[in-house]
Amino acid sequence: MNIVMMTEGINSIKKELKAGLILFSLLLYTTVSGQTQDYKVISSATRVGIGFVNVGVMGKNIGTVTNESGSFNLDFADIDNNDSLRFSMIGYESKTLAVNQLKADPIKVVYLESKIYSLPELNIVYPRGREIELGYPVVTNALRSGFSDNNLGSELGIQVYVKKRLKLNDIHFNIGACTYDSVTYRLNIYRISDQFVWENILTKPIYISFTKDKIRKAITFNLKDYSIIIEGSTIVTLELYRDLGEGKLLFLTQFFTGITYHRKTKEGTWIESPGQIGMYLHGQYLR
Image (tube, rainbow, N blue to C red; front, top):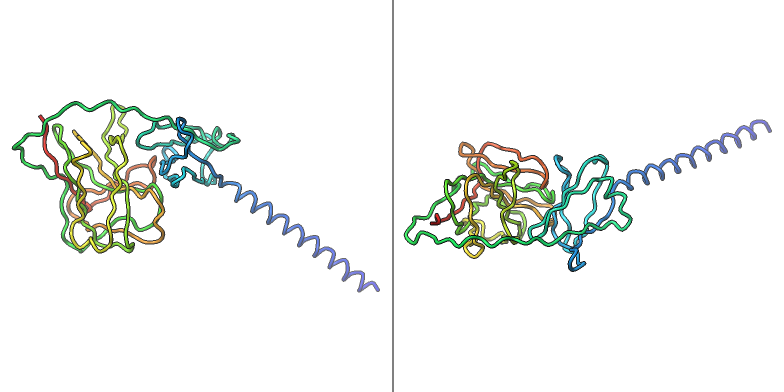
């Protein structure tokens, strides 16, 4: 009898321990899963979601990009309440919010105001001016570098410098490998501001698409219709702005020539790596 009672007591303890472990597991799951929250970025004018907005923790390599409808989710596990999030998209005024302010928002919506750009000055291209090449074509296949994972908002490119105002005509890419059938990336062009911050000078988004069968030759994209004018130090990049799935896009890279600039998210720190990817531009000086 005593043995039976002891067995029943042990079974009871096991049941209690099992129930406790299940409860602890549920609490742990709730705590971890609760770190990820869903939000939406909406136009304050149209009340419509804004697709492909950059969302980044300022000063950290943490961020993402909204989907086509403006929705995104963010994992707060490595984000402090006193951190700041910046929302940026060409055509809209950027907005910065404290993380604790965003978490406290019951409707989980971020509104962006449309941005009004001043009209550029009328410039005339030198009719007989020679075309200037910025960057270097790369033909060797000895080294490749580029997008090897699917981190939304990651970008890489080159820095160029021109002494006076120059209008861009086109941009070219030497691709070494592409595992996708087709790809689309977003072009970004940054100049240094008076506050020593790299600002995107484009007034409308530019998306560059090409198929895998075209990479045997340099990929060329015409920029003449966009009236892009650069001066001084400029960083030109391609950005992974939408989910392409597992795969990679690698550029032919010249190790002993120049530097490649890259960062994991829009608000992350630029990293300089030796060797320049096959990305180059043509343009003409303005009067």
